[in-house]
Length: 345
Ligand code: ADP
Ligand code: MG
Image 1 (cartoon, rainbow, N blue to C red):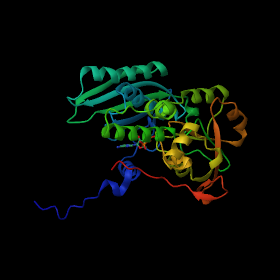
Image 2 (image 1 turned 60 degrees about the vertical axis):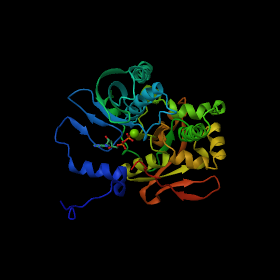
Image 3 (image 1 turned 90 degrees about the horizontal axis):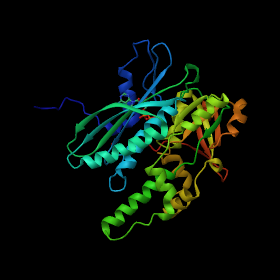
Image 4 (image 1 turned 180 degrees about the vertical axis):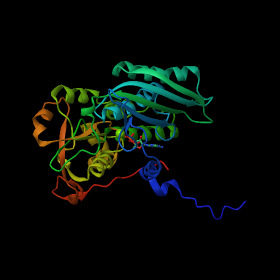
């Protein structure tokens, strides 16, 4: 059968966000309970009471993790955290998860126990209940897909879209370390494959490797906002990198922004590692990803409330859209901020 007339578009032509936009354009929300659908860190539904926040994230072996250096227990933990982080990005508190796994016959019962030990640790640490899931076999790799459910008062939900020119841009912790941790693990893997009796030397890289293998979700920041009556005007969690995630806020809010390079928090160990790899530390902070810090904006009148947060850095400001999204370098230059994009396809 000839397929000459059938158009075939490579997914890489659209990219991840283009593909999601294409899917989203096919569906509109028809039910009154569906308040927010595709497009933010999580969906919002309301059955006539407390709004419920729902998000799903999948981790695929060979794409999101490599079992040569991601221990199964950590993997289970991280798969939960990346979902809880998206709930936090809506200013909500995570309450329940469902966990679906697809496993090949490479995995023993004991291996699956380890994954669930990590999932259990995350559930305990964040006071979240596992309420269900699904189990399937897979022809080859391991896939973990988790849905997280949370809640927040209707007037405290934060979206990507609420930032206004003049708002202050803040982040809850240092950036770039998880990416550099991954580069170190990848290098040690290559060394090990070439010379299996060489022991990896990771003792001076505990922080960055820890940020890659065992991220945390910033529930404490969400609790702080509630305690002091601070409502960020916009919020997102940094999963793809500061640049890409700031661009999401600016696009959704119809604004520009600038980041002050000198104010972007980068851990000393990350900075050292970047230099060892001949990478610019700020590039790692902008484009690394997997930091799972919250990037949020607040009205200037709330500045005092932000200053007293346990872990917070003021890194820039929201500007009118015409000003674009820029980086003010320590050397006094202004560069446009661009998303490095997505390399999965
Ligand atoms: P995040 O990085 O915060 O997890 P994503 O970039 O994965 O967010 O997703 C952005 C938005 O697109 C979310 O609202 C998500 O629910 C939605 N989305 C992603 N993939 C799909 C899909 N295949 N079908 C429907 N919605 C999707
Ligand atoms: Mg997110």
